[in-house]
Length: 450
Ligand code: CO
Image (cartoon, rainbow, N blue to C red; front, side, top):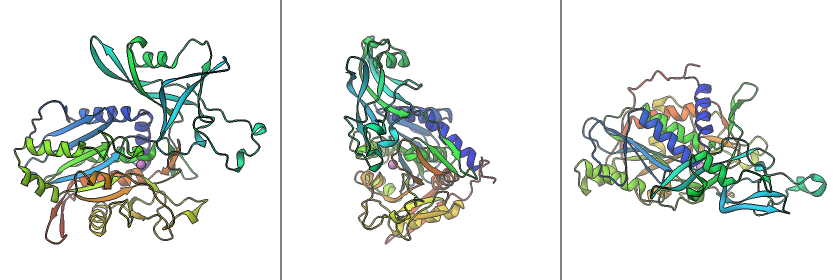
């Protein structure tokens, strides 16, 4: 596939994944179609050499992995996150205004840029939990049409609107849903979309989303814009990379965690036991003991993949002088002295070797020393499963806007790098010495032909 086709395919994946639950359901289907066998957390796992498996937690996190034919020696893990900043509908969410309008009562999920949510068609997606024949079931919901909108206040009533007006989430950011006394309630629409009776819905996790689809743009069609590039661009590349990889020595694993945008500290986040539980169950299923497990972890590596900031054309002074990536410049390796990013000279060198093997350009990112950056998955996951980790991602603009911008070539660069990563193995030696094996033999028909 060509660069643009890969980015378009990625944006189609985003378009059909309006909530983190849809992300995981679509990934699960992708892996199932590719022959991955589903494992349920509440059942005993029976695994075989050469097997490929997928498991989920809470319907919002997923781990897929392939086992080599022979005896495996460790794990090659790429992690990314399924969630993006948005607004969540409160449990009681319809509010009447002056007996004439009905607005939605929402609260912020994650740290977001508020202003671009104004004056654009929005919809609602997520899940509802229903009671059916004495059982509780969760059902996906996507209203799938222009449903609500957060109108700006006219400039005549707010003359300072262009001077950096503050936006209060409880005052300024409430979407208009309908006229009072209208026919369709929010829950009625959700029930219809879920194919259930409204009376059977016990609770809901419903979120707003931007209806604008992704697009390729620019004088030479070199840019892409789409909702949720952070982090579904990395999710897409990790999932596809795993599907296209073959590894003869290591278990190749794609881990997609929910709740990164709110600190990862949930039962399904990177701060949970999900990854550790899966690795220990694999270990047990192959009859290995704790000593075997710890040896395997020493011969393992994680690429924590989450998008990073490209130099902004209007604000070049916000980027570090030498450590700033650009759109279309390839995979970004992220550094932070205080270890907000896990990258160190060893893990960086290992990942650079992977990129070189893949023929993929890489660039580096560090925050300006006077700007406090964000955090991500790697160091949080390391608290549970401590292994050599590098923080990577793709360069983008307007992070945490409901419409983010990236480079059309970069999705393919990350996909290619992760395909080689998942096909490689790490072997630990003395004194932080490592050997990288494999990964060179797999040239696929999806190779870019530009
Ligand atoms: Co992110």
